[in-house]
Length: 254
Ligand SMILES: CC(C)(COP(=O)(O)OP(=O)(O)OC[C@H]1O[C@@H](n2cnc3c(N)ncnc32)[C@H](O)[C@@H]1OP(=O)(O)O)[C@@H](O)C(=O)NCCC(=O)NCCS
Image 1: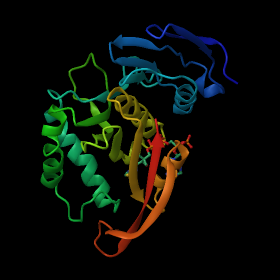
Image 2 (image 1 turned 180 degrees about the vertical axis):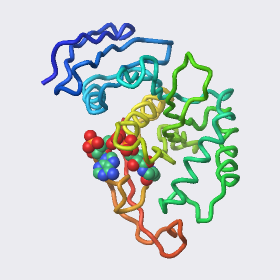
Image 3 (image 1 turned 120 degrees about the horizontal axis):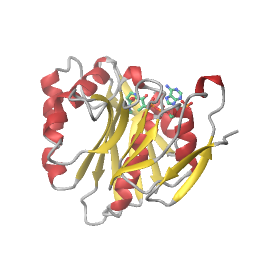
Image 4 (image 1 turned 30 degrees about the vertical axis):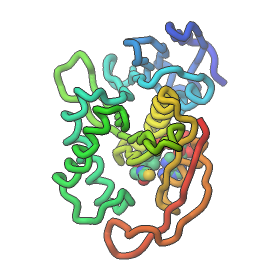
């Protein structure tokens, strides 16, 4: 049951009332405040509630953030579409996320051993597409914007806008990664929410992707509304190079 504490969303001109269930959440507060043209902030009391929020409200932005009022007043998780000017300095952190995945034997198009330099090259090669608005890198960052410390990179995802003349309505999702210690907190879902909004803004009406069959990502995509269309068996080598693995293809109309 959600009741009580008011949440205001200024630009959307709406207000909802939420009270967080259970003793753990008794001190949690909730507000939804526009902090810039494309950035929203939410207190992060519980990601389950955030999931509830996202399920029930159509958020019309491509970037938002939410606070953890229990950890620190100003600690924020921000979901941000990288501007071309800020993208290069995020590359080392993105490379670390990618390296962690490959080393954990998660299919990411790479084979072990996978160095940080290879990771940086992968992200650097996307820079031109980012500059030309053909690819968008969406990241989850944690940190206090008032402090001069570097934010922590929690996760990322790539939106590729298909460039073929007959596919200007289509987008592809790639490299959705949430750091291991930050998984199951709703971050993956929020990255996709922002990605979908970005895709809509660029006239895309359908998204597709493939992911390793039997992986937790396959379960995740089903849970967040993507439709599986089939499996291609033995389509690629697993990152440890030992055996062939299958991938499931998904799509979603947005
Ligand atoms: C797949 C991945 C991005 C999910 O990110 P996440 O932030 O943990 O996902 P969320 O917390 O938003 O999960 C949303 C829902 O998906 C489902 N889900 C997510 N991870 C799951 C898991 N390991 N097992 C079962 N269900 C899962 C759950 O229903 C979850 O909701 P719940 O926690 O309320 O039950 C993350 O596990 C990851 O980075 N994995 C490694 C990289 C990878 O495989 N990427 C995909 C490449 S295509």
